[in-house]
Image 1 (cartoon, rainbow, N blue to C red):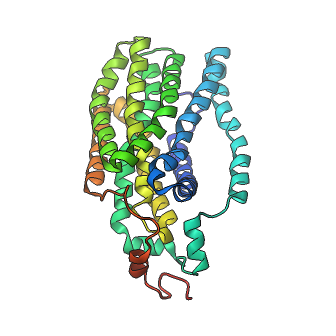
Image 2: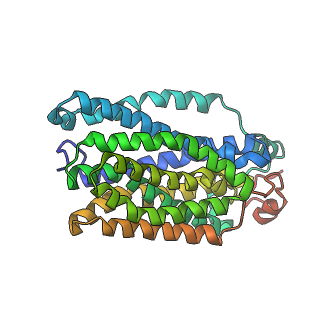
Image 3: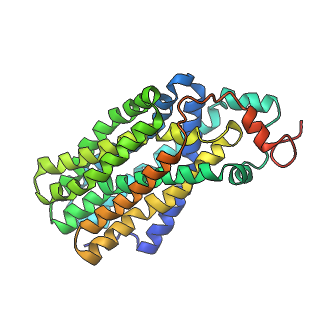
Length: 340
Protein backbone atom coordinates (compact mmCIF):
# COMPACT_ATOMS: atom_id res chain seq x y z
CA UNK A 1 0.00 0.00 0.00
CA UNK A 2 1.11 3.53 -0.66
CA UNK A 3 1.97 5.30 2.63
CA UNK A 4 -0.82 7.68 3.62
CA UNK A 5 1.72 10.43 4.24
CA UNK A 6 2.80 10.47 0.60
CA UNK A 7 1.43 13.26 -1.62
CA UNK A 8 -1.84 12.68 -3.43
CA UNK A 9 -1.47 11.90 -7.17
CA UNK A 10 -2.62 15.41 -8.17
CA UNK A 11 -0.13 17.03 -5.81
CA UNK A 12 2.59 14.65 -7.00
CA UNK A 13 1.92 15.63 -10.61
CA UNK A 14 2.14 19.37 -9.85
CA UNK A 15 5.37 18.95 -7.91
CA UNK A 16 6.93 16.81 -10.63
CA UNK A 17 5.85 19.36 -13.25
CA UNK A 18 7.52 22.23 -11.37
CA UNK A 19 10.61 20.10 -10.74
CA UNK A 20 10.86 19.31 -14.45
CA UNK A 21 10.75 22.98 -15.39
CA UNK A 22 13.43 23.91 -12.87
CA UNK A 23 15.67 20.98 -13.74
CA UNK A 24 15.44 21.64 -17.47
CA UNK A 25 16.66 25.21 -17.10
CA UNK A 26 19.54 24.39 -14.77
CA UNK A 27 20.47 21.34 -16.83
CA UNK A 28 20.86 23.49 -19.94
CA UNK A 29 23.18 25.92 -18.20
CA UNK A 30 25.35 23.21 -16.66
CA UNK A 31 25.68 21.27 -19.90
CA UNK A 32 26.50 24.32 -22.00
CA UNK A 33 29.20 25.43 -19.58
CA UNK A 34 30.81 21.99 -19.87
CA UNK A 35 30.26 21.67 -23.61
CA UNK A 36 31.48 25.09 -24.72
CA UNK A 37 34.44 25.44 -22.35
CA UNK A 38 36.12 22.20 -23.36
CA UNK A 39 38.04 20.94 -26.35
CA UNK A 40 35.92 20.45 -29.49
CA UNK A 41 36.88 16.81 -29.89
CA UNK A 42 35.92 16.00 -26.28
CA UNK A 43 32.46 17.58 -26.16
CA UNK A 44 30.71 14.28 -25.44
CA UNK A 45 33.04 13.56 -22.53
CA UNK A 46 32.82 17.09 -21.14
CA UNK A 47 29.04 17.40 -21.43
CA UNK A 48 28.49 14.00 -19.83
CA UNK A 49 29.74 15.14 -16.43
CA UNK A 50 26.61 17.09 -15.44
CA UNK A 51 24.75 13.85 -16.23
CA UNK A 52 26.76 12.10 -13.53
CA UNK A 53 24.70 14.08 -11.03
CA UNK A 54 21.83 11.63 -11.55
CA UNK A 55 23.58 8.47 -10.29
CA UNK A 56 25.42 10.52 -7.67
CA UNK A 57 22.06 11.80 -6.44
CA UNK A 58 20.66 8.28 -6.56
CA UNK A 59 23.55 7.03 -4.43
CA UNK A 60 23.02 9.77 -1.87
CA UNK A 61 19.23 9.42 -1.82
CA UNK A 62 19.20 5.62 -1.82
CA UNK A 63 21.93 5.59 0.82
CA UNK A 64 19.97 7.88 3.14
CA UNK A 65 16.76 5.94 2.45
CA UNK A 66 18.62 2.72 3.20
CA UNK A 67 19.86 4.07 6.52
CA UNK A 68 16.42 5.38 7.45
CA UNK A 69 14.75 2.12 6.43
CA UNK A 70 17.22 0.05 8.43
CA UNK A 71 17.03 2.16 11.58
CA UNK A 72 13.31 3.00 11.69
CA UNK A 73 10.22 0.90 12.03
CA UNK A 74 7.94 0.64 9.02
CA UNK A 75 5.42 2.93 10.69
CA UNK A 76 8.03 5.61 11.43
CA UNK A 77 9.51 5.38 7.95
CA UNK A 78 6.11 5.76 6.30
CA UNK A 79 5.18 8.61 8.63
CA UNK A 80 8.26 10.83 8.36
CA UNK A 81 11.42 8.88 7.54
CA UNK A 82 10.93 8.98 3.77
CA UNK A 83 10.96 12.79 3.90
CA UNK A 84 14.52 13.07 5.24
CA UNK A 85 16.37 12.69 1.89
CA UNK A 86 14.15 15.38 0.36
CA UNK A 87 14.85 17.76 3.24
CA UNK A 88 18.60 17.12 3.15
CA UNK A 89 18.69 17.87 -0.58
CA UNK A 90 17.80 21.48 0.27
CA UNK A 91 21.43 22.00 1.30
CA UNK A 92 22.42 21.64 -2.37
CA UNK A 93 20.50 24.82 -3.18
CA UNK A 94 23.22 26.89 -1.56
CA UNK A 95 25.91 25.13 -3.62
CA UNK A 96 23.97 25.66 -6.85
CA UNK A 97 23.38 29.33 -6.04
CA UNK A 98 27.07 29.90 -5.38
CA UNK A 99 28.03 28.29 -8.69
CA UNK A 100 25.46 30.33 -10.61
CA UNK A 101 26.72 33.59 -9.10
CA UNK A 102 30.42 33.00 -9.68
CA UNK A 103 30.76 31.15 -13.01
CA UNK A 104 31.61 33.09 -16.17
CA UNK A 105 29.89 32.76 -19.53
CA UNK A 106 31.44 30.36 -22.04
CA UNK A 107 33.97 31.72 -24.58
CA UNK A 108 31.52 31.07 -27.44
CA UNK A 109 28.79 33.15 -25.83
CA UNK A 110 31.23 35.89 -24.87
CA UNK A 111 32.16 36.20 -28.56
CA UNK A 112 28.51 36.85 -29.39
CA UNK A 113 28.22 39.40 -26.59
CA UNK A 114 31.26 41.27 -27.90
CA UNK A 115 29.66 41.38 -31.34
CA UNK A 116 26.32 42.35 -29.76
CA UNK A 117 24.58 39.58 -31.69
CA UNK A 118 22.95 37.57 -28.90
CA UNK A 119 19.36 36.59 -29.51
CA UNK A 120 16.79 39.03 -28.15
CA UNK A 121 13.93 36.52 -28.00
CA UNK A 122 15.65 33.11 -27.99
CA UNK A 123 12.53 31.06 -27.24
CA UNK A 124 10.70 32.57 -30.21
CA UNK A 125 13.72 32.07 -32.45
CA UNK A 126 13.98 28.43 -31.35
CA UNK A 127 10.32 27.74 -32.11
CA UNK A 128 10.48 29.64 -35.41
CA UNK A 129 13.76 28.32 -36.76
CA UNK A 130 14.48 25.07 -34.90
CA UNK A 131 11.11 23.30 -34.51
CA UNK A 132 12.55 20.02 -35.78
CA UNK A 133 15.44 20.21 -33.35
CA UNK A 134 13.05 20.81 -30.46
CA UNK A 135 10.99 17.77 -31.46
CA UNK A 136 14.16 15.72 -31.89
CA UNK A 137 15.39 16.71 -28.43
CA UNK A 138 11.98 15.90 -26.95
CA UNK A 139 11.80 12.50 -28.61
CA UNK A 140 15.43 11.68 -27.84
CA UNK A 141 14.87 12.20 -24.13
CA UNK A 142 11.34 10.80 -23.78
CA UNK A 143 12.16 7.10 -23.82
CA UNK A 144 15.33 7.63 -21.79
CA UNK A 145 13.33 9.13 -18.94
CA UNK A 146 10.62 6.49 -19.04
CA UNK A 147 13.24 3.73 -18.96
CA UNK A 148 15.16 5.39 -16.14
CA UNK A 149 12.17 5.81 -13.86
CA UNK A 150 11.25 2.19 -14.48
CA UNK A 151 14.71 0.80 -13.77
CA UNK A 152 15.54 3.10 -10.83
CA UNK A 153 12.23 4.08 -9.21
CA UNK A 154 9.39 1.79 -10.25
CA UNK A 155 11.56 -1.15 -9.27
CA UNK A 156 11.02 -0.16 -5.63
CA UNK A 157 7.25 -0.02 -6.03
CA UNK A 158 7.16 -3.36 -7.82
CA UNK A 159 9.34 -5.20 -5.33
CA UNK A 160 7.49 -3.92 -2.27
CA UNK A 161 3.89 -3.86 -3.45
CA UNK A 162 3.81 -6.67 -6.03
CA UNK A 163 6.39 -9.09 -4.64
CA UNK A 164 6.17 -8.16 -0.94
CA UNK A 165 9.95 -7.96 -0.62
CA UNK A 166 11.82 -5.71 1.82
CA UNK A 167 12.35 -2.17 0.61
CA UNK A 168 16.07 -2.54 1.30
CA UNK A 169 16.37 -5.18 -1.44
CA UNK A 170 15.43 -2.68 -4.14
CA UNK A 171 17.36 0.18 -2.57
CA UNK A 172 20.55 -1.88 -2.44
CA UNK A 173 20.11 -2.95 -6.06
CA UNK A 174 19.69 0.68 -7.16
CA UNK A 175 22.74 1.66 -5.10
CA UNK A 176 24.92 -0.91 -6.86
CA UNK A 177 23.55 0.04 -10.30
CA UNK A 178 24.07 3.76 -9.61
CA UNK A 179 27.68 3.11 -8.63
CA UNK A 180 28.24 1.50 -12.02
CA UNK A 181 26.57 4.48 -13.71
CA UNK A 182 29.04 6.89 -12.15
CA UNK A 183 31.71 5.30 -14.34
CA UNK A 184 29.60 4.36 -17.35
CA UNK A 185 28.03 7.74 -18.15
CA UNK A 186 31.31 9.61 -18.83
CA UNK A 187 32.71 6.53 -20.59
CA UNK A 188 29.78 6.45 -23.01
CA UNK A 189 30.12 10.22 -23.47
CA UNK A 190 33.77 9.64 -24.39
CA UNK A 191 32.81 6.79 -26.72
CA UNK A 192 30.40 9.11 -28.53
CA UNK A 193 33.34 11.41 -29.28
CA UNK A 194 35.06 8.54 -31.04
CA UNK A 195 32.25 6.76 -32.90
CA UNK A 196 29.50 9.39 -32.95
CA UNK A 197 26.51 10.33 -30.78
CA UNK A 198 23.88 8.41 -32.73
CA UNK A 199 25.47 4.91 -32.71
CA UNK A 200 26.01 4.98 -28.96
CA UNK A 201 22.59 6.47 -28.27
CA UNK A 202 20.79 3.97 -30.52
CA UNK A 203 22.67 1.02 -29.06
CA UNK A 204 21.60 2.06 -25.56
CA UNK A 205 17.97 2.51 -26.61
CA UNK A 206 17.84 -0.84 -28.43
CA UNK A 207 19.46 -2.58 -25.46
CA UNK A 208 17.00 -1.03 -23.01
CA UNK A 209 14.08 -1.99 -25.26
CA UNK A 210 15.16 -5.64 -25.06
CA UNK A 211 16.23 -5.56 -21.43
CA UNK A 212 12.88 -4.28 -20.12
CA UNK A 213 11.35 -7.65 -21.06
CA UNK A 214 14.01 -9.46 -19.03
CA UNK A 215 13.87 -6.89 -16.22
CA UNK A 216 10.60 -7.93 -14.58
CA UNK A 217 11.16 -11.71 -14.91
CA UNK A 218 14.47 -11.20 -13.11
CA UNK A 219 12.66 -9.31 -10.35
CA UNK A 220 10.04 -12.04 -10.15
CA UNK A 221 12.72 -14.56 -9.15
CA UNK A 222 12.93 -12.76 -5.77
CA UNK A 223 16.66 -13.49 -5.84
CA UNK A 224 18.71 -10.61 -4.44
CA UNK A 225 21.50 -11.32 -6.92
CA UNK A 226 19.21 -11.39 -9.96
CA UNK A 227 17.34 -8.31 -8.80
CA UNK A 228 20.69 -6.51 -8.65
CA UNK A 229 21.54 -7.82 -12.12
CA UNK A 230 18.20 -6.45 -13.38
CA UNK A 231 18.93 -2.98 -11.98
CA UNK A 232 22.55 -2.92 -13.18
CA UNK A 233 21.58 -4.01 -16.69
CA UNK A 234 18.80 -1.45 -16.92
CA UNK A 235 20.97 1.44 -15.79
CA UNK A 236 23.85 0.26 -18.00
CA UNK A 237 21.69 0.72 -21.10
CA UNK A 238 20.36 3.97 -19.66
CA UNK A 239 23.95 5.20 -19.29
CA UNK A 240 24.61 4.44 -22.97
CA UNK A 241 21.81 6.87 -23.83
CA UNK A 242 22.43 9.36 -21.06
CA UNK A 243 26.19 9.71 -21.64
CA UNK A 244 25.97 11.24 -25.16
CA UNK A 245 22.54 12.82 -24.57
CA UNK A 246 23.73 16.17 -23.25
CA UNK A 247 26.11 16.85 -26.13
CA UNK A 248 23.70 15.44 -28.72
CA UNK A 249 20.76 17.64 -27.69
CA UNK A 250 22.88 20.77 -27.23
CA UNK A 251 24.60 20.41 -30.61
CA UNK A 252 21.23 20.46 -32.38
CA UNK A 253 21.06 24.23 -31.83
CA UNK A 254 23.22 27.25 -32.70
CA UNK A 255 25.09 29.10 -29.96
CA UNK A 256 22.68 32.06 -29.93
CA UNK A 257 19.76 29.86 -28.96
CA UNK A 258 21.49 26.72 -27.67
CA UNK A 259 20.62 27.32 -24.02
CA UNK A 260 16.94 27.94 -24.75
CA UNK A 261 16.62 25.25 -27.41
CA UNK A 262 18.26 22.46 -25.43
CA UNK A 263 16.41 23.41 -22.24
CA UNK A 264 13.04 23.64 -23.99
CA UNK A 265 13.23 20.18 -25.51
CA UNK A 266 14.60 18.76 -22.27
CA UNK A 267 11.87 20.38 -20.13
CA UNK A 268 8.96 19.21 -22.27
CA UNK A 269 10.28 15.66 -22.37
CA UNK A 270 10.85 15.80 -18.62
CA UNK A 271 7.18 16.56 -18.07
CA UNK A 272 5.84 14.03 -20.59
CA UNK A 273 8.33 11.32 -19.71
CA UNK A 274 9.87 11.72 -16.28
CA UNK A 275 6.93 13.35 -14.52
CA UNK A 276 4.29 10.97 -15.85
CA UNK A 277 6.25 7.70 -16.05
CA UNK A 278 5.89 6.68 -12.38
CA UNK A 279 2.20 7.58 -12.36
CA UNK A 280 1.45 5.71 -15.60
CA UNK A 281 3.47 2.66 -14.58
CA UNK A 282 1.71 2.38 -11.21
CA UNK A 283 -1.68 2.81 -12.90
CA UNK A 284 -0.87 0.08 -15.43
CA UNK A 285 0.24 -2.30 -12.70
CA UNK A 286 -2.91 -1.61 -10.67
CA UNK A 287 -5.16 -2.02 -13.70
CA UNK A 288 -3.70 -5.21 -15.17
CA UNK A 289 -1.88 -6.71 -12.15
CA UNK A 290 0.96 -7.54 -14.54
CA UNK A 291 4.29 -6.01 -15.48
CA UNK A 292 3.85 -6.70 -19.20
CA UNK A 293 1.87 -3.48 -19.89
CA UNK A 294 4.61 -1.52 -18.10
CA UNK A 295 7.23 -3.14 -20.33
CA UNK A 296 5.19 -2.26 -23.42
CA UNK A 297 4.88 1.33 -22.19
CA UNK A 298 8.67 1.55 -21.81
CA UNK A 299 9.12 0.00 -25.25
CA UNK A 300 6.80 2.58 -26.83
CA UNK A 301 8.83 5.43 -25.32
CA UNK A 302 12.10 3.90 -26.47
CA UNK A 303 10.80 3.42 -30.00
CA UNK A 304 10.04 7.15 -30.13
CA UNK A 305 13.57 7.84 -28.92
CA UNK A 306 15.14 5.51 -31.49
CA UNK A 307 13.14 7.08 -34.31
CA UNK A 308 14.07 10.61 -33.18
CA UNK A 309 17.78 9.83 -32.95
CA UNK A 310 17.78 7.83 -36.19
CA UNK A 311 16.29 10.76 -38.14
CA UNK A 312 18.59 13.34 -36.54
CA UNK A 313 21.93 14.43 -38.03
CA UNK A 314 25.19 13.24 -36.51
CA UNK A 315 26.34 16.19 -34.40
CA UNK A 316 29.68 15.08 -32.97
CA UNK A 317 31.75 16.60 -35.78
CA UNK A 318 30.03 19.97 -36.22
CA UNK A 319 31.99 23.17 -35.57
CA UNK A 320 30.32 25.15 -32.79
CA UNK A 321 32.37 28.22 -33.74
CA UNK A 322 30.83 28.35 -37.19
CA UNK A 323 27.91 30.69 -36.60
CA UNK A 324 27.47 31.84 -40.17
CA UNK A 325 24.54 29.57 -40.96
CA UNK A 326 22.90 30.38 -37.64
CA UNK A 327 23.34 34.10 -38.22
CA UNK A 328 21.82 33.87 -41.66
CA UNK A 329 18.83 31.96 -40.36
CA UNK A 330 18.08 34.29 -37.48
CA UNK A 331 18.84 37.42 -39.48
CA UNK A 332 20.67 40.57 -38.49
CA UNK A 333 17.54 42.50 -37.61
CA UNK A 334 15.21 43.23 -34.77
CA UNK A 335 13.36 39.94 -35.16
CA UNK A 336 16.14 37.83 -33.68
CA UNK A 337 19.23 39.84 -32.76
CA UNK A 338 20.01 43.01 -30.95
CA UNK A 339 20.91 45.74 -33.48
CA UNK A 340 24.61 46.39 -33.90
